[in-house]
Image (tube, rainbow, N blue to C red; front, side):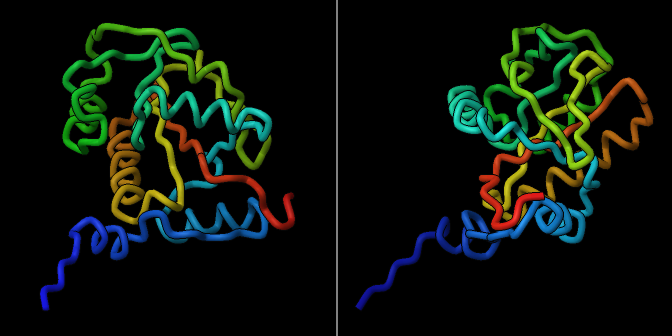
Length: 179
């Protein structure tokens, strides 16, 4: 008898990829990311509920993994062909972040058409400096969320007030008791 096991299945199981996690409300959801990944609650933004489907289609069409990119204003984001070859490569993202203040080619962005709010009802202002946009989800698993955490530390270490980062939640917001 031959038993075969896919490495992908083991990886997904070990890292909690596609794991269903239910939350009663946004507060509980935010506490999960604060406790598990040390994300700051005010950095986590939610799309408007009516825009969720369109946002998911946009992200899918853009072939975004967990790093959307870096917007420079509401119309443009940094275009990096090296990163476009593999937009989930930690090293490539880190290099782009560390070189954020160098001159780059720009391309259009559609993510700014969506409205995102954090728990304090503060909206993302894409015209307030460069914005590093990450996509977070409980379904991405521990490894990817830990990579995002490390990348936010790199941004913080730049100590540049003109560079912001935002964590956009793409988890379904059908909480049992919404706040």
